[in-house]
Image 1: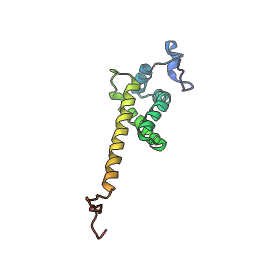
Image 2: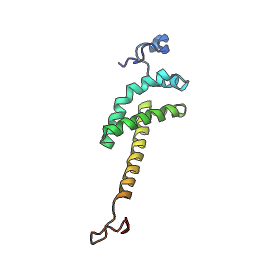
Image 3: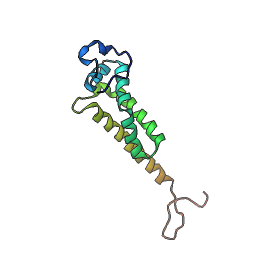
Image 4: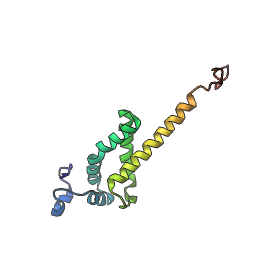
Amino acid sequence: MRKSIITTPFWHVNESNLEDPSDEFLVQIAQKGDIDAFTDLARWYHERIFHTIAGLTKSQQDADVHSQATFLQAYRSLKSFKKKAGFYAWIYRIAVNKTLNFLKKRNREIKRNLPINNEFGRDIGKSKKD
């Protein structure tokens, strides 16, 4: 059973949610502007999102940067969250899409900076003046 990470959240007043506030309940409260409810969700899912991104990027530094960006985007988009899927599925999709966009951009930049060789092995990507 998941317990709230926040020490004294106001939703504990409701005894039906005293022990284990659900994602849906926390999202509803966060959508009304309660930052503590969103913080609870972020803390609960941070490790899973971090490891998902690290698996894609093969870099803990990139995973740290992009997991933070994922939660920031999720917070900014929280009002548009539709409850078709769960919160984790939604934030997972944000994380994967952001990471794939980052990887595509990084690969384009790498390719742009690689020299182009002709069939004789000569660099034809840059002029002789370079």
